[in-house]
Image (cartoon, rainbow, N blue to C red; front, side):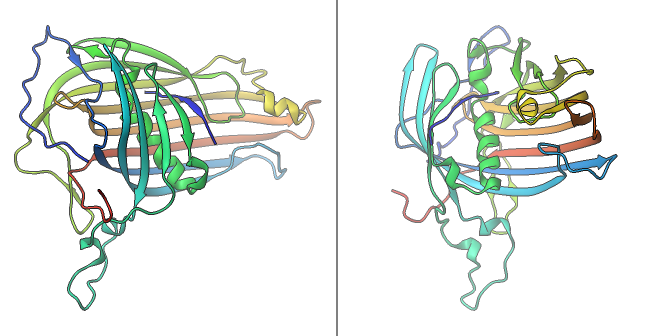
Length: 325
C-alpha cells in the first residue's frame, strides 16, 4: 500500500541551546542524520457517545467508540535531502514492545520484563515526508492494528508540525493560519478545520526518561530550549444544515441534515537545538447533531454525537533496543 497524506500539522544528546532573540528567526525543521534513531511515546484517549432517536439501523451512521491506548515508536532515519529551508525525509518506524508501560510483577530472577531491552514488534512502516509537507510512499501501515494505525498517524502529524509553518522559520510573536478539510468520514459534508497558530515563547525543555514502571519523568536540569507553539482549531461547516449530504451517503440513497462543530487546542514544544518535537499535548472536542434519512425523506434517524480526545506525544531519551545496530 502506498499513500499520500497532507500533514497537519537514535537520539541526539541535547546540549545547551542559545535561544534566538525576539527579532531572530528560528529554523524549526528537524536537524537529522541518516542512521539516526528516535524513540517516541504516544498516549491517546478518546470517547464518542452517540444518542439515537430511532431504533432504525442506517448504513454509514456514527457509532459509539472508546479508546485508551499507547505505544512506543522507534524511528530510523534512512535518508534525507535538504535544499535551503526545504527538507525531505525517508524513514522507517516500528513499534516496540511496551511492557515498560504496564507495571509487572518481578520474576524469580529479580528483573522485571520492563528492565529487559526493548524489542521491535510487528511490521515496520516506511514513509517519506516531502519538502512540501506531504506524507508519501507509506508502506506497511495496513499491517498494523487499528490502534497502532491511530497512534502512528497521531505521532506523524505532530512530528511534522514544522512543515505546517509557512516559511519553516519563525520568531516569537509570529502567527499563521491554515485551513484543511476534515479527513475522516462524516455524515456532514464539507467540514474544514481552521487552525490558528502562534509562536508564543521559548521555554526550557528536555526529552523524557521512561522508568521501569512506565512513568515518563524529566531530569532535574532541563538541558535544552524549546519554541512553544500554540494552535487552536475550529471545525467549520461549509455545507448547508438543510442538506449536508456527503457523496458516499448519496451513493446509498441517503440524505443528511444537521450541524457539526469542534475545537482543539494543541501545545507543541520544538527544540531550538535539534528541531525535534520534544512534547506535544492536544485536547479536542466535537459535537454533531445530524438526521439521516432515505433520499425521499422517509425512515429518518436523528443522532447526537459528543466526542472528546486527549493526546500526548513525548520524545524519549535513547532507549536500549535489542538488535539495534
